Length: 282
Image 1 (cartoon, rainbow, N blue to C red):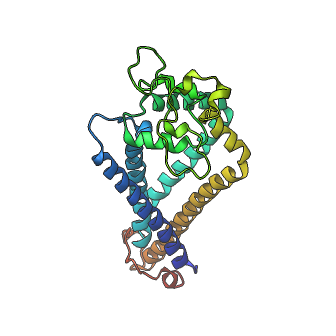
Image 2: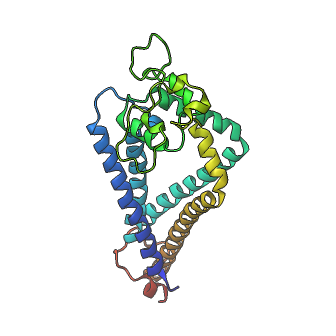
Image 3: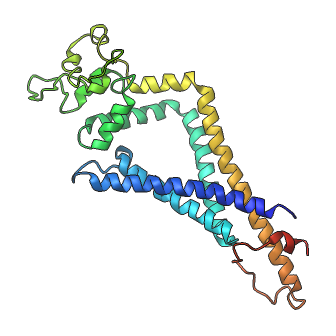
């Protein structure tokens, strides 16, 4: 019956770390959302600030249940935390299985989402920065000519934009020891053939590049995914173990209460520093 403190504080520390991280994510997202201009992209998957707020807030609430439940020995909070975390774990496993079985469908929907991001480039500063960050070794979704889907880079004679038939500067191949960034290096690149344009900009699409990177780094991807699932599984096990320990203490207390098991209501709250090891050995 020993080791309750180790279970309790290990769970508390794990939840507390994620709680702090989630608070930072939500705060950054809120700050970015407030700093934006009005009438910008407000779609969840295309708005990094909104995505940070939603993910950070969800993590904050879930890990708060784990932190407070573990510290106060609250079975109600711990059960809620355990149920939510189990559901998330099952959804992640299901998503992985579906993604593996229906790879083509997942790739098609990912392509649509990325194409929408290209269309809305320049409408949202955070989205623009995110795309520029991704386009360090690639350009567009399938090729550099995908940028013709954007109103600023559309390759038409009637397009008055100076960037017509061009690509963003993030697609440009940076030279060694280059200190000054040439933001006009992508101008007119869509009018060139792939071999010619490839001398100055990346011509391969980012979807293909991401798929290539994942295939050639399977061990890293599997390791990161497995580590996340293992951490969630360990937290589920810790929460279940703490709930089981509290239930045993409640059972012993009810047996010792005036010799009647049904005469005392179970207590869902205990002092934060209650020594359950000693109680369990009585």
